[in-house]
Structure formats: structure tokens, C-alpha cells
Length: 162
Image (cartoon, rainbow, N blue to C red; front, top):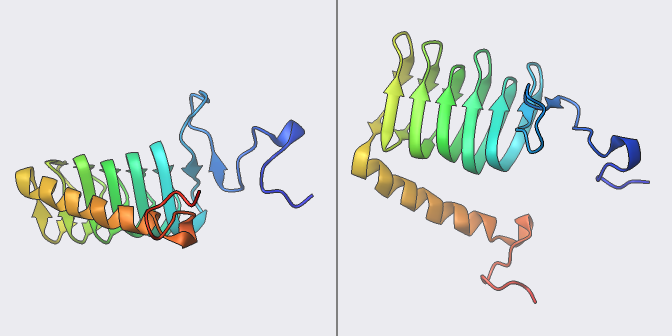
């Protein structure tokens, strides 16, 4: 069987390189494990933790956590962003962004609320407050266009396809 959906005993299994959050609760965020690599468009709800390498784009209604030792090269639009590892690219957080003391960040950043711990390195323009809210609204509009594309299963003309 070539189905991508797990069945039977494998129904709760996660792909190689991914594992459940430590609490193991239903709906727990997947984790790209250290040594794992993901390239492409990552979309999720709630929370995703990255400990490996991610390249591409991230569009989410939730929190992205880039753990210490992780490398992310991406354009990012999320509700919350927490970085303890390495981040390169454009990052927009609709609510807040936090850069921990081990963070190494390079790129264009926007978040209404921004917290930077001592020791973090942040290089590039940072927008906060109302300016960040405007940038987030523009980024969300761009993301809607992308998500409506036929390539991702949306209808290019905005119709439901029915």
C-alpha cells in the first residue's frame, strides 16, 4: 500500500526525524529532531519545535520555537517566534518574538512585542509596535495569496472549486 496515511499500529507514528513534545499530549507539536533536515513550505497550527535544519518558508497560526543548535533559513510568518538557535531570513511574528541568549539572528524582523535576552546577537532591521502590526498584515495578505494557489490545493480564483 502506498498511502501516506499511517494505518493500524502505525496510526500514531510520526515521520522519521519527528517526535512528540515531551508531555506526549494529544495534539502535541512535532519536533524536527537534531540532525533532521526539512526543505520547503511548513504550515502548522499551535506549536512546532525545530532542533534540526529548516530551509524555505514557515506559515503558521501558532508558535515556532527554534531550539539551541537549530538552523533556520526561511521567510517566516507566525503568531509567536522564540529563537534560541540560528535564524536567517525575514521573520514576522503577529504577537511577539523572543530571542534567547544563545540566539544568532540575521534578517528583517517585525513583531509588535520584541524581547531580546543578554547574549543574543541580532543583525538587521527590527520593527516593533504599530509598524510591526502593519508589516504583519501585509505579510498575511501575501501568505493568503500563496495558500490559495492551485499548487497548494487552493483555488487560484478564490473559489472553493465546487
